[in-house]
Image 1 (cartoon, rainbow, N blue to C red):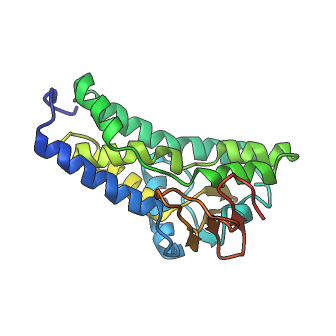
Image 2: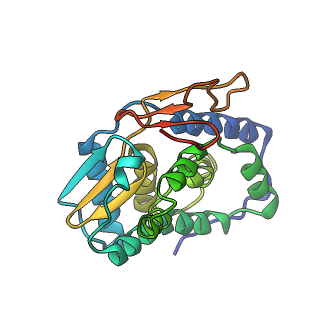
Length: 231
């Protein structure tokens, strides 16, 4: 059983550190270095061991999220089960950490650790598969990391800055997953991971925005515009 004391307030120094963690995870959200299959493979092996789900015999890195959803897994039900299990790890850790904090600092961290994410990608994926119910089920089931970056940044701060107790092996696996994997899909005996974007275009206020050009470009030539349109 985890032993802990309730954190009632954040010091000014801790509040300043929270902004550093926000910047750290924002930079990761906008990383464009290609994901390597070797790194993703080890991350997914660690997750599989914690969750007791199938260990990948192979991990493939596809050039974009669009490539990930062009084929349907042979066993969609098992795919959904595995993806749900992986996604639940963030919720499990959040529950462990949240019990160690009063409401005030927990809400304060939510506000100070806001992360801008690559939300237009999901909009574009929905447009691409809007007439394919089976692929829509895949997208719903797949682990969408972007929406969890707020939680992971907050976990990072609470665990490493505030010293909150947690299952360290689980946290290590989740942190590596957040750094090393994009959209994720299980297909037979292997996992498929979508690569990071190759090019990101930003507007005057630091938001993803291209004027008459795509905001996001992938290595296979897939393009996403800031309004969610794709080509």
